[in-house]
Length: 212
Image (cartoon, rainbow, N blue to C red):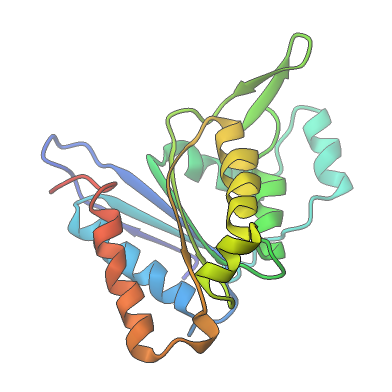
C-alpha cells in the first residue's frame, strides 16, 4: 500500500489533515515505528492521517533535466504534482528521517529538491524578493542519529541542522516549524529506550493535534 488515509472529523465537522512524510528504507527501523505511532496519535485526535513512505512508493528523488524543462514551460511532472497536492491539503506536516552524514538521506533531499519547486513552495518577484507560498503550513521534524545528543549539540551540529532545514527550507517557504526533535545515540539504544522514545511522541503531539 503506497498511501494510507484515516479519516475523522473534529467537533466542528471539519477534518484536519496531517501529512506524514517518511524516508527510511528499513521497515523495521525506529523511523517507521515513529510513523506508526504518529498515525495512531492523529487518529486519536480525530484528524486525517496521510502517509507518504518515499521508499515504499518508489519516489524518484533525482531532479532531472526533464523536470527543469517542464518547469520552464509552466508544467509540473505528474509525480511532483501529486506530492504537491498532498502538501496543499495538509494542515500539519511531519517529516521523519534519520541523519546520515550530517544531513537528510538522499531520498528526502530529492523530495525537497523536486517537490518544493519555484511557483509552488516559493517564488521570486520584483528585484529578487522572495515570496513565501506555503504560509500557514505547520511542520514537525523527527530525526535519529548515532552520536549522543550532547555530542551533536556541543559540536554545533544541532544548530546547523536546524538552520539548514528549519530556516533554509521550511521557514524560507513560509512554513512554521512547531518542533524539531532529535533522538541521539539510537544505534546503541535498548529496546526499552526505543519504546520510550515512541511513547514520548504522545507528549510532543498533544501540543499540535486538535483535541477530539
